[in-house]
Image (cartoon, helix red, strand yellow):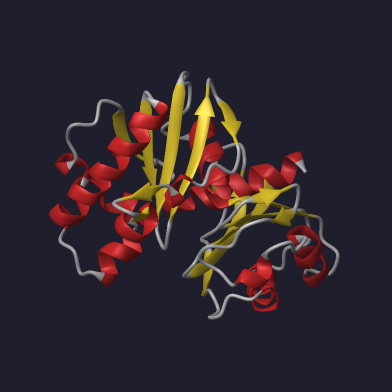
Length: 246
C-alpha cells in the first residue's frame, strides 16, 4: 500500500509515495527549497508542487516544524509566524484540490517511523528521537506510545535555546568542526538525559547520514545513542503513516 508523505523543513520541502509494507520510499523523493519567508501561502504552493510532481491523487500526510494541535499550528520557530493558528490541513487540502490531508509535528512523524520500522522498533521504556537540522526536533516515547509536540529543541541551554547552539544550522553558521559540534551535542543530550532519563536516543535528520563523524565523539551520556535507520526519510514515512490513520 502506497501513501504520500511530505516533510516541511526550514530549508527544504520533500516528499514521495511511501510503501507502508516496507516502511520505505516507493519512488525517489522530490525536493524543493523552502521559500523565504516561509509564509503559509508560499509553503502550500511548494507542497502542491511536490505532490503534483508525482501526479498523486490520494491521501497526503504532511509534517510541520512546530506544535500541531489537531490540524492547527500553534508554534512556528523556523518558518513564518503567519502559520500560527492556521488550520494547516484545511489550507493544504484546498491547495491540493480537495485531497484529504493530515498534518503533524515533523519530529513526531520521524519518531513514529523509526519506532515502527527503524532503530526504535521493539524498544520499550523511554526513547527519545532527536532530529538535527535547521532546528532540533524531538519525539518522546514511553513504552512505544508517543507524547506529542515535546519540542525539546527549545529547552534552554547555556542561556539560549538549545537549537541555536547545537543544531546542524548552528554547526554550519559557526563553521564548527565535527569535534566542536559533537561537544555541543553532548551537552545537549546530557541535559535532556537529566530531565527524562531515556534508555535510548535516536539521532535523525540529514546529519544522521554522517553519524560516524560525530557519534563516536559523544561520551559521558548513559543512554544508548544510535543513528536513525531511515535517516532523513523518516519524516516522509511518518507523514504517510499519519495519512492512513487520518
